Image 1 (cartoon, helix red, strand yellow):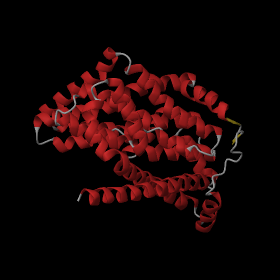
Image 2 (cartoon, one colour; image 1 turned 90 degrees about the vertical axis):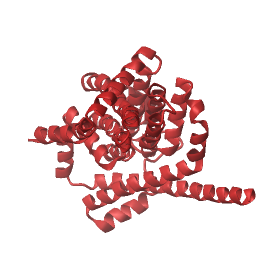
Image 3 (tube, helix red, strand yellow; image 1 turned 120 degrees about the vertical axis):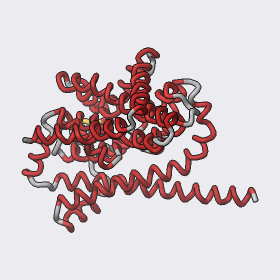
Image 4 (cartoon, one colour; image 1 turned 45 degrees about the vertical axis):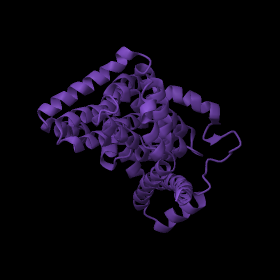
Length: 369
């Protein structure tokens, strides 16, 4: 009986490995297709993109709204990397958008917390855990966005690091071309369809599908059983929780998956809100691997943007993780929000609608006018 179960488990893992490989190939293909599609867009479309993202605050909320709508910061950041690689978006314009995507991705964990709304105590803890991810990313944006806008803080550091890997628009190392091996196929598809906007929509859909398939395959192969077995162990030490959150999310390629797993653990009192915070910080860093993969074979600006995504989350971690008093600020605020929302459950829904949809949409709409 045990041998049959082991054989079945081995077969399932083999299928998951194969699915991972296929999903990774699809992801690289989709990113390249997106880059080619963007390069074929006419000048008028390109100008509209540039005008929309010229204001850094509008760019921030575009990233937030896009991520909230499609529920995947990985898709948004990978797509932005591809747009930068195509030359239609500058690094400086793209940085606030990536910051916005970081806030937008926290919607999922907050929505998961609403599933506990029928039980007041569980709902209070779950909503606090869900909002903790939002608050951490919002605080990091408040600190780093002004530094980026006025001093080019993140983009300048990223460009200097990118210079170590490449010179100009192509690699100087063993990879000498900035064309992906899928380029002949992507160019053929773009030419055959001959409608750049349609190719653009298709490529975004493929990016989203590839990330979903990849995260599901990795979750089944490596995470499902191990997370259940060692969740008590990893939350004993904040640095252990941080490391596990980083690698766990890097494997799954989705911080929304990992942080959404934390919410039920906090709701059921298996993990406290305070102990879950370092894991969430690590999850933020782990999710940057998607942009890194998307930047393969790309221009210096695209690689620099992938580095910006990583630096943004790393600096956020360095601000809060080593200092218990600073670490307690987002936790205390999240617990307060949880308590307040339980008194009037409408506040939870109002918070989600205002933060992720109404405010971003209104700011984008009125700024365009």
